[in-house]
Length: 393
Image (cartoon, rainbow, N blue to C red; front, top):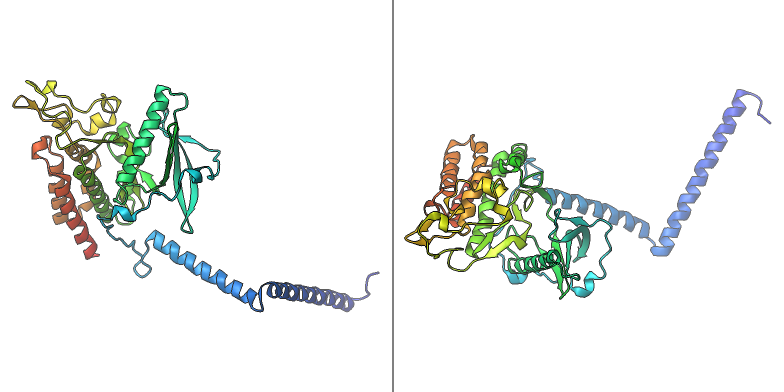
């Protein structure tokens, strides 16, 4: 039955609101007592303190991971140490028994149409830290030629990742299981982007358009270009010192992190040669009798044939009736032509620095391998340039 008059209706509404607030107050006290009775007299306050502390730690972690300097708003930078003791880097976090415990992933992603290995993305916990990884697997149960190829390239990648562990530019191996019929292993998933945003072998890729756009749109193109250049020659210097030729150069087998560090993500494409260059000391009378790199990766109109086109050692050199052969020095010419020399455009603000960079690049891209700079020489000079720029900021 409705209450008569406007004042009575207001009074009725006020009483309802008071009752509702009192009910909520009792509920809150009940929850608080429940929390405290289950977990101690100050559990709720402790929980709030833990939550606030966790949020503060999360913010700090995020700031560190993004590399931000809060005072200046600039991206901080630190040169990674070139010399990390391999024995300090573990590669056995996961054994064969652990691989059976990994979650089954519904998305298996093949690397390419022919497929070196089947891969899938996942996250694992190592030392209480969640780490994105790539799970790779190759089986040869049917013993087909394709399966044999996948198996042996996977096995080779595990061997190289183990041998090169701790070196800059090489992804971390977190565990492997090699059997007669299968190879399974977990590799660090690189956070960044590939040199090219296509299949890595197109004309656009050979002109390095994508990576140039990325460098140009970065907050500090000068720092980005010098860091990418230095990390590139540093990586190939390490291969040079270990007599390893990177056979499958492509825009998807090389990745760049958010800090502009170059990472080699296809270690099974490394080929070892001894103290002598590959195909050297073969008797010859003419250049065309000396073999250069061959196979599908080096055919006409391939990425390699484009970026290495001016390099004389691509097609073989005969000197005094002996083939000169080729080695990692071939990459100096090709990588410089591909994108290293193009990075010079971002240094125009500092002419002296740009001139020094162009000198290094000109030495690397020399067509004649005997007049070409080594990666070691270029690495030392680029490191000084990079450090000089960092000290100016």
